[in-house]
Length: 285
Image 1: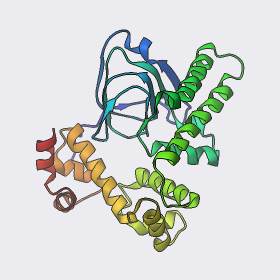
Image 2: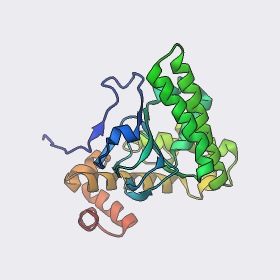
Image 3: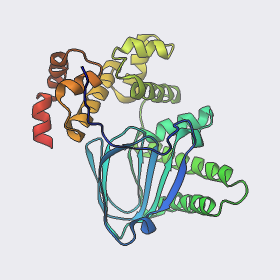
């Protein structure tokens, strides 16, 4: 039986996902004196929006944020968002994929994982100065394209991401060790990739060469939740993405999330959300 599915719009950096992509835009020039409104969509690349001045509204995975000065938004590939920027906003919009930055460097992989687990960073005017100066340097390198500009851009991008990592360290201190934080980020990345086909905690422990006890100890010590709780939260998030961003039937969404039995999925959703998928869609659209 054929199934016609409405997909969440995906903005692609390149037709070939293995190619490197990198682009930076001046927000003031991009807006051209006009208000910008974007409907719900995903990206297949990392999205970083740094605003020196600005107002508007940004909803990321159905969590609302007010757009304001000295803020930086970071989205991982696959996250759903909608954005409204008012015409007076200034700053930079940066799009890149892992291929353009990481290049199999373990330190860079860990840094990118860490900073992209938080979607909104808020600075004061002094704290924002370093980030905006680094972005200005990246913009000039990207525009001029002098010899070695890609290496200079990557070096500056590392500085920017390190500043965001430091911000996490100051504002979101956890109880986990650096090792636990690194393994947590590894688990969350695996979850993002495999949640449709892998729904048992033991499957992730095996992929990470850990015992289930070890993996649960890591997630409990860092964010106070078991591995199974995080898996369930991620499945519910993906369900909400499709319920609110598409008009697909609940049975089709259940199938796309790896459930052959739609009634089981409906019970699972109701247990965690307190209402059926149909009621959730009606109440929140």
